[in-house]
Length: 185
Image (cartoon, rainbow, N blue to C red):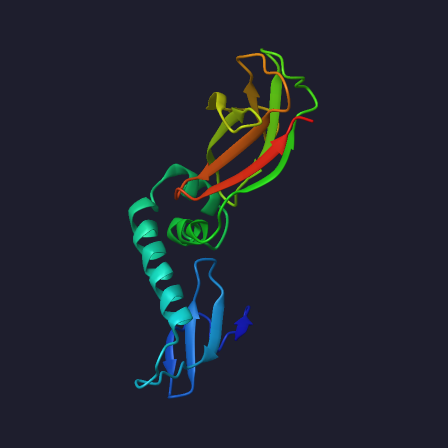
C-alpha cells in the first residue's frame, strides 16, 4: 500500500485502475493506492477464524449502535478515524488495571484505596469488593474518578481486621470487565 501526497496525476482520483490497483481517499484526504484484493470463493475457515469472524460481527453491531456516543466522537475528533472505527476498536480491547494502591488503607473506615484503571477510550465504572480471609463480603461499592489524574478513588466504609482482600472490577463502554485481587498484608 502506498500513500501519495501532492501528486498531480492521482490527486482526487478514487476507484479501481484496471484489474491491478485500487485508489481511495481516506478521511484525512490522503490518496491510498493498493493492490486489488483477491478472494477465494471456496475457502474453508478454521474454527478459530470462524470464532474471530463472529467476534468481529458482534463488534460491528456494537459500533453501529454506539458510534454517536460522545466519548467516541471526542476520541475520533482531529484524527483520520471515524467514531464508528473508534467504537469498533474499543470493542476488541478490554480495560486494564495497572495498579491497586493500598498504601493509604490500614483496614480502617474512611481511608482511601486508589485504582489506576486505563482503557483505550474510557473506563465506565470501577467497583471494589472487600472480603475477609474466608471470602465473605465485608463491604462493596463504586470508586469515583479523580478529577485531576487517571486514578479512581474508593473510600472504605467499615473497619476490617485480619488479612482482607480487595477485588477490583473495571468496566469499559462495551461492557468488558477486567478484575484484579490484592491482599492488604
